[in-house]
Length: 257
Image 1 (cartoon, rainbow, N blue to C red):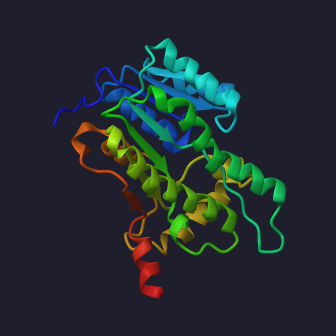
Image 2 (cartoon, rainbow, N blue to C red; image 1 turned 90 degrees about the vertical axis):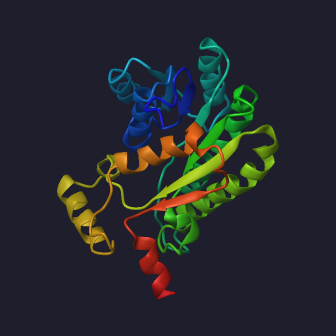
Image 3 (tube, rainbow, N blue to C red; image 1 turned 180 degrees about the vertical axis):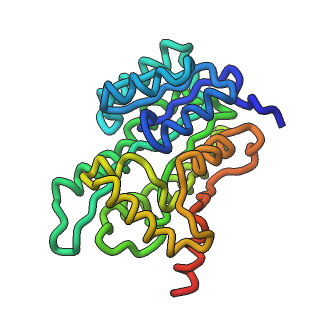
């Protein structure tokens, strides 16, 4: 198998300026992609990401809006109008107990985590290579597990899981594959951005690791390599799959049921 499976391909990674999205964008670029369009809402982080590899193209856009989707589509058109891989990674997280869930926060979460994928896919599907195109979602084990205090987030990821399977069936006649990765505890800057101190994040992940059979939590590169693998030509017979990667934590939950 060639180590440059994405030579001369064009990729979009939403939320691609940080964390798992950035790791995936860099993996695509290092594996030969001609252009990797990365989206985000913060100009400073997009600029920092673009400086890491010449193939990365920053597009400041809220992809949950039609305007944002149009901006991404314009970038695709600029580079020839054909898209090979679409990675839906952009997402937000919120917590709230039953009876205390903030409706505004819930609406924003669903706009970004769920409707954003619909809006952007609607806009980009005509450009997605057929046959041979690939869509990869970044979901979560929360999408298929009870998640107290984060039920809205879990519900949004359950919706993403449904998209993965349903769209895989719908798009199979066109030769377009749809898969997803479901990472567990992966340390990214989202925790510090939520207001936690580095020490608090250290403590949170130390505690989380005690529930992981392998004894360690993840890093973005643990996930990004599977995003590129699912999108690669070598996975041409794989569609409708949701790959959980969490060090075995899902096995512990299953045993407890």
